[in-house]
Image (tube, rainbow, N blue to C red; front, side, top):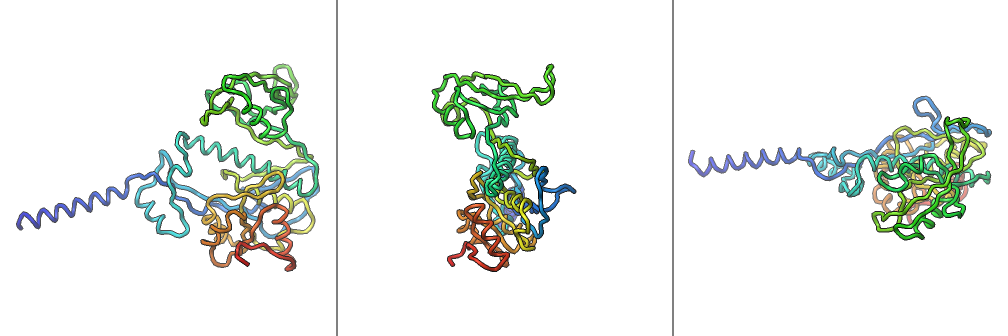
Length: 358
C-alpha cells in the first residue's frame, strides 16, 4: 500500500476516534425532561399531599395534579455531548445553556436551597390565596428563612425569627422590609426587632422573646445595601394546612396547591371527576404567574392521564406551539378565574378561557 492511502486511512481513523471521544466530553448544557406528576388531592408515600386540621373538610374526586421538570447536568455533573445531541432531537426534551439553571457565581447547593425555599414560600402563598378566595381571615408577617454566609445577619438573625419592625416601623410583608433596608446607604446601621422562640435557657419551650438586632449594611451584588437576611412570607392561619411534596422544588405548583386546598375546604368537587393538571405561581391575592419548562410539564401531564391543563396566561403562546394531542389548554390569570373555569368544565355551562384564538 502506498503512503497516500495509508495516510488517509490513519487520518480517518484518528478523526473517528476523536469524534467518538469528543461525544463523551462534558458540555455546559442542562437537559430538561418531564418530571414527576403528583395529585394534590391524593397521597404521597402514604400521607395526604395536602393535610388540613382544625377545619371541616369535604371529600374530593378526580385529580388536580402539579407537574414538574427534571434536569440532568449542571456544574460538577455535566452531561456529555452525545446526551445533549440526543436531547436536541427529542421534541419532549429541552437542552438549555447551563447558566439558565445555574447562574454564574452560584453553586448547585445554592440553587437547590433557593428552589427548596421557593417551594416552601409557594405553599404559604397558596394557602393564603385559597383562604383569601374563601373569605377566611388570615394574618401576615415576615419570617427569617436563613442568612447569607459572611453577611452581617449571619449569627445575629436566626431561621424562624419573626421580623416585627425595621427601624421602628412595623412590617407585614417582604417588600416593606426590602424598601426600608434599601432606603439606607452602604455602611448605615439598620435596627431589626424580631420575635424569637426560645428553647431551653430557663424559658418554657415555645415562649417568644422580643429582641433588637442592629446590623450594618454592606454592598450586595448590585451594589445596593443588604444585610444578608433571607426572608419568607409568614402568614397566620386560623387552622393548620400542611403540604408534603418530597424533593420537589420551585414556586410553580402554587396554583395547584391553592386549588387543592379550596377543593378540600368546600362541598362538592372542582374536577367533576376529571384528571386536571396545571402550573403557575400564585400570590396571596390569587394572581397566577408564568413558569418555565411549560413544554416538559405538558408532556408530563399528558403521560399522567390529564385531559385538561391549566396554563398561566403568559405561557399560552409557548404552550400552543408544543401542546400534546388530547390535552385541552385552559388559560388562567387568577385563582378565582381558574375556579370559574373548573365550574364551567364540570357543569358544561359558561365560558372556559382558552389559550387558542377562540
